[in-house]
Image 1: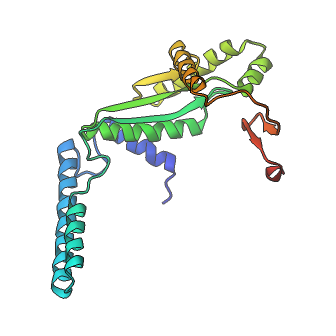
Image 2: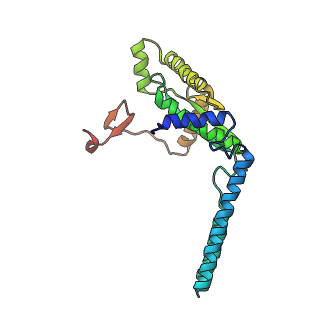
Image 3: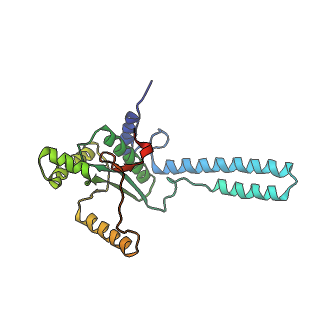
Length: 223
């Protein structure tokens, strides 16, 4: 039986929203932690066993010493999910608003939502961001086709992305727009710092530019 990635992510997101992990035996945060501890203990036993064999069969003290260090390192290893003492931040792509959202936006939003919900269930402090990127010639051209100002165009399209997140019950903590005044001030400050330090300067450049891809291409890359 074939299961699409989108269907699998949707199922995992549904499980997370209902407070369940993805396997019947791990329904609570405590059990997830117990599984992690069991995994670490099993790994520790395996490495200690290997160390015993190496120590008895090798006459080299340096190799035995390395084995001890390696065993200690492996038995104490943790995963990102196990590190509950640190905050966890995740973001969807900051979606481009030259048109309404499609299945790709739903896919990446759901994928991030699954991770964010799992981390919360595992006891992590999570900050989950989404938003819209509202700049560029493509936006200008799309607004011109509709006969409305660019700001009005992005205001309308940005709403559709918020509605998508609500429809999918995405648990993002914040939604940023690059036309927000707070974002504008942050970018202006960053630009000024770079300019003051001499990292940005005026110059000239010519080349083949793609409005759709928003980048320059070399002659060798042209088809």
